[in-house]
Image 1 (cartoon, rainbow, N blue to C red):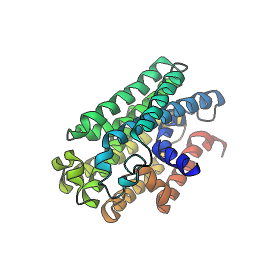
Image 2: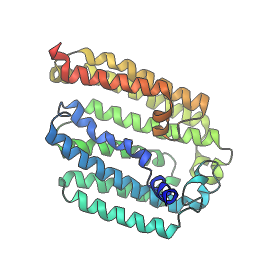
Image 3: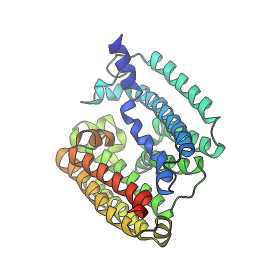
Image 4: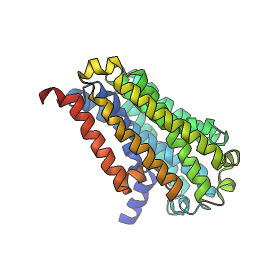
Length: 295
């Protein structure tokens, strides 16, 4: 019984739910993170994206089961490994989609549009777009972007254009690093994922360098923008750029030297330097935005 439950938990990818904390980004940088009313509604938004992403993962696993069975790691997924039937998985997926309908109707209409746009993009990705070079990484990256914007709409706040650009570049960086690891770590990758025939290590490296630079420059410019300094009443946010630079460089090191990076959450769970860097970045940002004036 417990083994079966563990298989279903693995199927819905609960370990990937932290990606949905991106809905809190707008609240953090608009100085509303510690307001109970905002936090409660954002938790509902987090739940909506979590359930939606789980439903999408199930659909994708059903579609990719034959190819996943040939992958050195993905063959252990519940559907590919034969632990859960496609029929049972499909029923669970339908129930999750029904729950998304229920919870999104309780939230703001603009937020609901972004959740369903996320689902639509991923449906198209699972069926068609994952085989279209470059478009595929934009589909992967869109999920992070939609979470940030949806979170802003959910609590009716504006997001800095520089912060949006930072998210776009970060999303694309993570997506292309995923493709790079797939090519480098699996000799049969191009047979299992057709679109990888249109990528090469040198091509992914060039895109990775461009997007990594975009992340660092966009965030640095956001941290010193007049609007940012005015809202936070401090110029100290610029120092948090050091954590961003370290995070990007460390991630690239893990991708290039350790062949990790196919799952960003796994890196955050398992790499101690990344965990420490993320923790220090978080407490520093919270201090500068919320408590700097008290000290």
